[in-house]
Image (cartoon, rainbow, N blue to C red; front, side):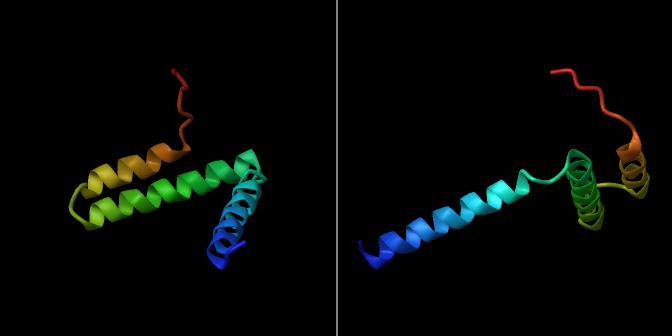
Length: 71
C-alpha cells in the first residue's frame, strides 16, 4: 500500500473517530453548544453591521425560549 493511500485511510479513520465522539455528547450539552454557537454568530453579524443592537438583544433573549418543531 502506498504512503498516500495510508495517509488517506488514517485521515478517514480520524474523521470517523471524531464523528463518533461528537455523537457521545449529551442532548443537554449539544443544545448548550448550539446555543453558544448561535449567539457567537449573532454577535459577529452585529460586529459586521448586519444586525442592530436591538436585533442582537432580541435574538440572544430568544435563545432561552423553546422552539416549536413544526416540520
